[in-house]
Every structure is written in C-alpha cells, then in structure tokens.
Image (cartoon, rainbow, N blue to C red):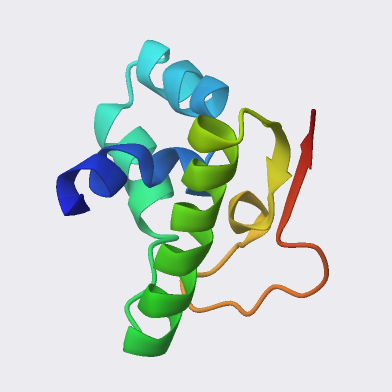
Length: 91
C-alpha cells in the first residue's frame, strides 16, 4: 500500500501537466525539486496529507468519482496548513 500511495502522491502536490512541461523544458532536477519541496517534513503534516491522499484514492478508485481539485496542490510550502475544502469531486 505504501508503494502504491508513494507512486501517486506527487500528483497531489503538483499538476502532472506542470511536471511534464518542466521536464520538456530540459530542467529535470527543477521539475523534481518543485514537486518534492511540497512534501511535508513534519510528522503531523505527513499523517494529515497521507490521510487526505488515501481518501482521494478511495473516492476516485472505489467510488468512481472524478477529482476537480485537491487542496494539497495549492500548498506553497511543505508544512502549510490549508483551510476550507480538502477535495472537490463530482459524479
């Protein structure tokens, strides 16, 4: 389960299109750094983000809903506490 979530986690922090655009521009390390710098280093936020990602995977893969956005992608710092709606989906 941890590997499955780890493979998908970066896509919750940065939109795939932005990662691809960075890679296509020839800046591989920048693309990776811009994604990884949003991963939390605080244990509290690691648990919090992990739970949010698991909930999103359940909603998308089990319930079949489509994700409009996940607030983790709006964070600008690794331990930022985002408020309001965590995940917005539609049927």
